[in-house]
Length: 112
Image 1: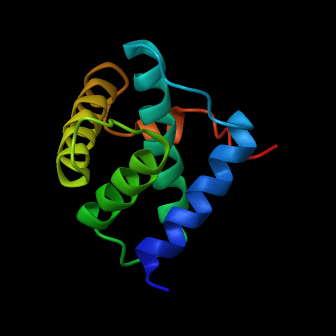
Image 2: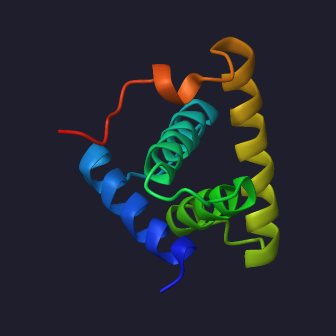
């Protein structure tokens, strides 16, 4: 199992601990909250691996989010592009309003 696939499994387990069962995302606020939580989980889990690149972390986040979100009118490759852009927007918002070190100031919801 690759590092990316291993991380996807771990992040999905973290999300199950945080949310129980992820419900349907019905608005932009829920989507941003979910995407932000996934990003924080990826950043926290990435500390386990020294050589995980930014592109690998983004690939993990895209795969995790894509496994929970279904856009039936779009092919999978286009869903991944849309999710990738949503991740970029969420990271830009976090960087703008919280700062570049947001991963260290957002509470760790993965610990219960």
